[in-house]
Image 1: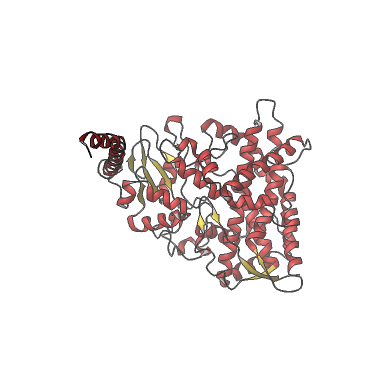
Image 2 (image 1 turned 135 degrees about the vertical axis):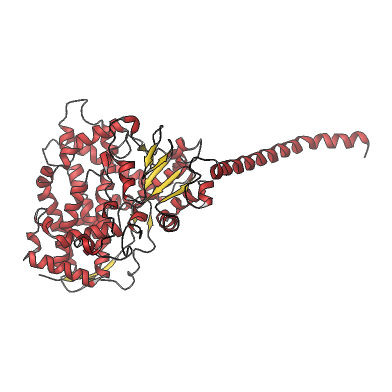
Amino acid sequence: MSLWNFTNVIDCDMPSSSALRVLVGIVILAVLYALFFCAYNVFFHPLRNYPGPLSRAATKVPYLAAMWTGYHHRAMHEVHDRYGPVVRIAPNNLSYINPQAWKDIYAHRKMRDLEMIKDPEFYVRNPDAPTIVNGNREEHARYRRLYSPGFSLRSLREQEPLVQRYVNMFVNGLVRVCEHGETAVDMVQWFNFVTFDIIGDLAFGEPFGCLENGATDWLLKLNQIEEAQMHFRIIQHIPLLGRYARQIINTMLPSDAVKGSEGHRRLTHEKVTRRVNNKESRPDFMEHILRQPEGKGFTFGEMLSNSATLIQAGSETTATLLSGALFLLLQHPEKMQKLVDELTNAFTSDGMMTIENTERLPYLAAVLEEGLRLYSPAVPGFPRQVPKGGAIIDGEYVSGGVSVAVNHYAAYHSPLNFERPLEFIPERFIDVSAFPNDRREVLQPFSVGPRNCIGRSLAYAEGKLILGRTIWKFDMRLGGNEGNWMRDQKGYVTWLRPPMEVYVKLRHG
């Protein structure tokens, strides 16, 4: 080969060699930046002195990976057991499990600048409009003001005939199932049926027909939404990509969960449209809103977004509480017998139970409280962002911009807060002197402060009425393979509950 030809070969190869060198350079710079970023987080970040795993201090990857899998709650339980009541769970995130943190993070603030806003990286905004869950201070205040009449104690009394109608259908449906003897049923599904029909009527003026026709397509979609929303949350944490989270998930990860989320939105649109066109006065959540002068109520988009949230929050949470409480009772026959005795001594028929008189049953109330502790429908912590000037949380200064939360699951299962924390002991909420070291004030499944759950009274009323009538009417036992029903469940915001086979027969005819 001549010198001329050899030079030409070198010249021809140069562009690819240059491109390779540039690519290698970019990779090296990226690695160096990542190492520098991790080193800064570990050694120089304002949170560097807080306890926690080194890997979580260095990078968000373990935090986001745990959320993606659905087992974030387990990881939080483990790190708090190891590192104590305050743990650094990501470079800019602190998790708490002590009672004072509830007040310091979530309580009322007189001035807007002192309020801890909801962490925008965690909360998923509805594409139609903000919601009562993720709206800013002014939006939330307006939504809550308009919804409050529908959730008042007066409205709850007016709504009781509607609620009782569906509880009657629930009880009668189970009676028909086991009229020829003991029969296996999926109680998770049955609890979903009754709570979904109740919230459908209260939100839209018509039920979903689950108690009459079985699982609807909408109910199946509802069970997929939590997973899709967690995927949105994780993408939101990625720099530059966060604002495009919904588009990325919808186009690149079109899973059944995402399709279910979009189906929920479409079906909500249909129901809201029918409720707006229904001029009949009725004691539901929409009545007060629809009677507002033009410009004072909700926009149609706000009705869509908030109705979708109410359907999810108002049915899934109560069904979760009922499923967990029943499972724990069935695992502990001596506790079940105590509740049976209380109910049968108080009532000669299940139809005598009302929202008012079930309030006077201490053991029923204690069973639900202990169910909320061991199987809270709210699984993770709900992060807030420390305001610009910083704040004192549990006696320690935390700088502005840090994401902070009280973690429900870890707090309620911690020996720092409860004696024998993994055991089902409803008595701890009756004879408090027998458990002097319990910090019962840490149990806040409905949160605290101005953003606590607006549906708390309704959830307790439904829970007591449905569980009380179920236990009075039916004798139940767990199916052979259901002993570990709680053990491996995924939890995103609420639990992804698998079927729970229960053998049901009449206790009283």
